[in-house]
Length: 373
Image 1 (cartoon, rainbow, N blue to C red):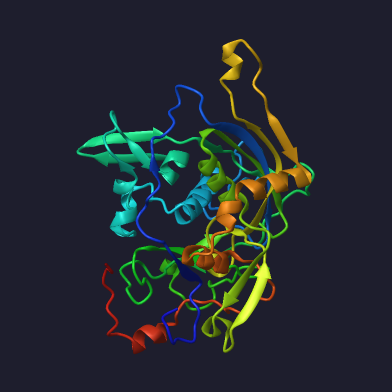
Image 2 (cartoon, one colour):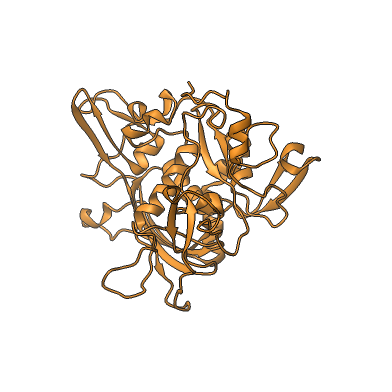
């Protein structure tokens, strides 16, 4: 929300620390190097979940009736977006040039010449890069693959909620009253909601509405993350962005807490899919099982079979905490703001969240709606 206003926009900004600094030579795919592994993850919906199939319905596998899924591309997009914040990396698409500061555009994801001394930032080395320079494409296939999330076999069949009509318009980067500058990333607040609002009867123009059939809270899915050739700090970034932190304490300002500063605690949770401004998409992602191998090449040397380390239960949670300890110990402005946005707490006093009413634009007709620098 613009400072001093009574309404709360559904999103806030996380400020990046500065230009990317962690550049290094990538590990290529023609030989084994670094850490390989597989992680089985459990995903539980905490609020309604809406992943659009293009027709306002939840995604499902075409050959299985009512087999609802969360596409792996959606999951990977969420994890990579968090990695760009935590790892201070560049965006992956040229189309984002208008939405980001120049330092974090895809143009700056790599240094040097592709065929000589190419060096990539931390996020590009982990998740990949595609950019065009001088009319030529430069491609690096990342080291992380995420499967579709499918319903847990032990859970009850998923029954979608009723279809609603939601408002599809929102401020854009050109609206300088709402976009302070471009060295920030937008995240949406968690909202403890049981169902989404329906604007079809609210006098809103039909052109601004889109249909949404969400899945309910309490649905459980499983998906797998496969990776190879990761360095220690690349694996740490992946693990942190997958599982976040199970307990954080956040200090809210008096403006955010409604008059007096306030401390709240809780786990950090992801936001996935569409309709996030209305409270949809809050999910918990937990590790179920992990296998790691630091020497895949051993199978080809003829001396010994490669050695895999397997983790489950408390041993798995301890291993994730150990490998992400340096990130969790960070207390810089970026991490403070990230924790404040992703904490999922019943004690959170912020809200209720809504877009500014039309009367705000009537009263502020002189506010410039021009691109920020």
